Image (cartoon, rainbow, N blue to C red; front, side, top):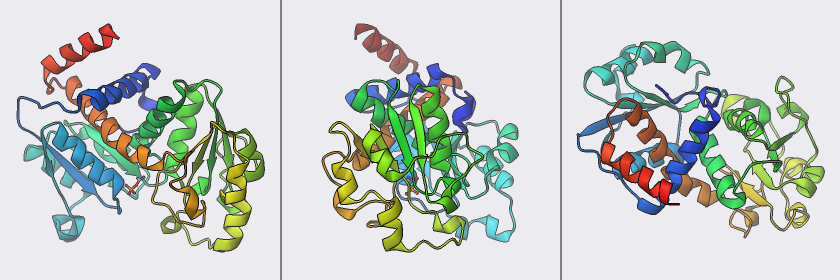
Length: 309
Ligand code: CP
C-alpha cells in the first residue's frame, strides 16, 4: 500500500488489518516514532472532522502536522496542486493528506510522488478514510458485516461517502440498499433502491447523508424532503431494536434526520467521529510501516498483543 487513495485498492486483509490496528489504538492510545516525522494537510474544501481528526491522529503518533491554507499559499500565484505537493515532499514532509473538489486529483498527482498520499476526499468520487471509520463503527457494534442490511439514504448522486461505503460494505458481505429522492439517485451504481418506509423496517444500519448543495443547485424543500425521504421521529420508532444510525456529518438538522434523533440511543454519530481518529492513526501507521518509517518495536509489541488475544 504506497498511498491510501481508493477503497478499490484495498485487499480484504488490508481492511481487516486497519480495523484491528484502530482497535489496538483504542486500547494502547499512542505510538511515538523515534525519528521526527512531518505530515502536511492540504485541504481545498471545507472540513471540520476529517482535518482535525487527522491532526489529532498525527500528534498522537508523534508526527508534526504542517498546516496549509490554500488562500494564502502560492497556489494564489498559479502554482498547481502537483507542484504544491512536490514542494511539501522536497521540504521534508513524510506524508500528505489531501482533500480537493476535483474527482480525479489522485490519478493526476500520486504516481510521481515519492511520499504516501492519503485521500481525505476526492470530489464526489471517494472518501476512503470515512468509509474505514464507518466500517469500524459497524464492526464494533455487530462484530461482522455478513448479511447486515445497510441502507445508505440521501443525496447518493453527489456523495463520495456513498460510493466508497457501498462498494466496500458489499465486498465485506453486507446487503447494501440505497434510498433517495429521484433527483438524487445515481442509476450508474448497481445497488437496489428502496423507499424510506421500507428501509426503516429492514435495516440494521441506517446511514444518512446530507444534500450536497455545494455540488449542485437542485433545491429541495426542507419540510417536504424530511417527510418524504428523511428519518422522521415516526420512522425511527419502526426500526429494529438493534438497528443503529450513522451519519458522516455535517448534519442538516430536520432535513435528512429529525434533530431529536442525532443523540438518541441508537445513534452512533459522535462515536463515528471518535473512531475517525483511531482509523486515521491506523492508516498512517500502515503507510509508514510500508516505508520503514514507523517504530518497529511498536509493530513487534502489537504482534505479541494480537497473538495473545
Ligand atoms: N465527514 C466529513 O468528511 O466531515 P468534514 O467535511 O467536516 O471533514
